[in-house]
Image 1: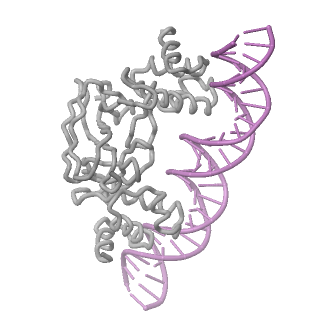
Image 2 (image 1 turned 135 degrees about the vertical axis):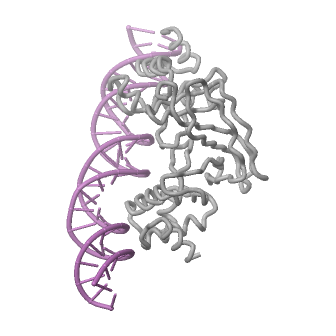
Image 3 (image 1 turned 120 degrees about the vertical axis):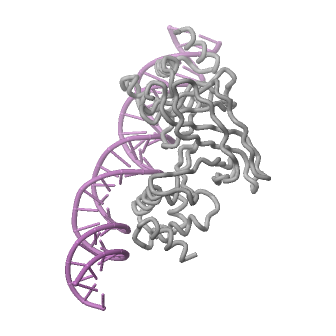
Length: 138
Length: 138
DNA sequence: AAATATTTGCAACTCTGTTGCAAAATACTG
DNA sequence: CAGTATTTTGCAACAGAGTTGCAAATATTT
């Protein structure tokens, strides 16, 4: 796992720092999306708020993680798939938010449905945000 | 139009106040979604920030407007369709955000596609968030 | 190992949204 | 339509999220 972390950071041309290693590790260990607050808690306030913000920003820019649109206006982040690269995200999978526990999952194997737009509109991206109860809470 | 505004407020059991009339009017006049900041600007800071927040909250509770999930973490509001009522929203249409001008539209006549969830997940709601260029900006 | 470049932590700030409370506006009652 | 009860507003103060500038610390390069 340690190798994986270092590899990912190097591949993106990022220098290896404690905070980047730790925060990336948290994403690799977690099977659902993380919000800024989760990361601060999980790293036991080991890093400054600002550092966490900047690290997340950097990861998004480099295509390591992506933000998940949400109905409750809380930004969550999740690991990108392999096809993502700096400045080029390809995360058109379905996101699922559990109403009970709040956990957010990327449903990789759920197809994004076709969307038909009115005349004159040009489609770039479709995000699907499903909510309900997850398999733990149902 | 004045009648319409009064009617909507009365139908929802709300008392008729200047701010509610004005803010509801802004929604009726606008053909796209409005964020809190838009409303403050459009009403030329006629009302206190707090009043705008509370009015929007009230409108959402009463089923007059609904919030639109967004990728950029800015809450936007739009008028609900007739089928909505207090505590019971039915706004499962496609929302479209223009990358250029930021305008957000409710695409009423675009069907919400089916989403297939993994075993054990229970679906309650599906939001579809499309982005690209609107007919003005394309 | 020294020099250079990058990243971190701190302080201070902005922006968004919330809460308690007194004053003002609205609705209700006779 | 005047008087009372209820609701809503505006203010002040606060809490939280996110950003920026800058000096100190850490990582990378040679």
